[in-house]
Image 1 (cartoon, rainbow, N blue to C red):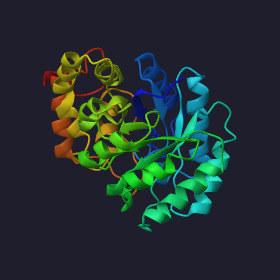
Image 2 (image 1 turned 180 degrees about the vertical axis):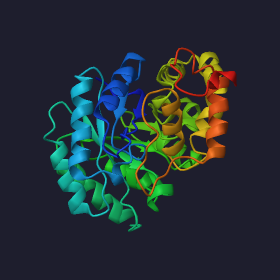
Image 3 (image 1 turned 120 degrees about the vertical axis):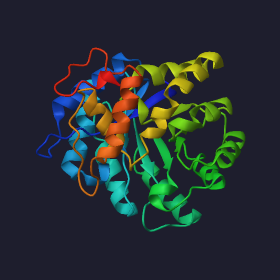
Length: 306
């Protein structure tokens, strides 16, 4: 299966006692696929991977792969700021039967330069036979992966693309105009998906699609088919919600929305906390106005009054 279109950066549902909610994750994965999502990315930033134990991380990946059952590709998050640890994690993922590939972000906290990042990503890629997606998210890691370094890494046979979350359209444009044609560049931010695709991007790895998988997959699919009227219409309808998912640190807002939809508990792991009461009220209002609660069983306040 060719990797393109709309992928979901999956949340990791937790039970009220803090453990991983496996039934909720299983149901979320099935809903995503049934709604038309093209691929899934568990255990990334949105999946709170940095708060999972190694056993939990591996279990979440295994459960997503098993539930997916080959219907769509699965790229699992595999990031660490110590290169030898990132390599060890990649080798563990290589043993997960049915996993499509890995997504690996800049080494965080260390703030390595371009050569350090090159050597780090090269070591991870050379440790496994799996396809590798780079993940440039300097706002989280403190390090930016520059286009020239990405081009060097693109020469390695199993580094197939990048999730670009720098928000720097000039940098992303430079990459799109200089990278090999088969190198895939995915928007890592919902709000710039259409500009990136218009410049030649391969799609989006989305936060919003956790809650609106059908709408986001249709928007990205339309853009990929040059149906910009449809793509812009959907983008216009849901752009405020895309932005709202970052009113507070991700994934707190998207988990709040998913809890309103009955998809998972509104539980995060410290140091992440649920959204404030004020943000929750605004999200409730927006979700109600968008008609997302139609058919959702209400257990308390009927938010559809908004």
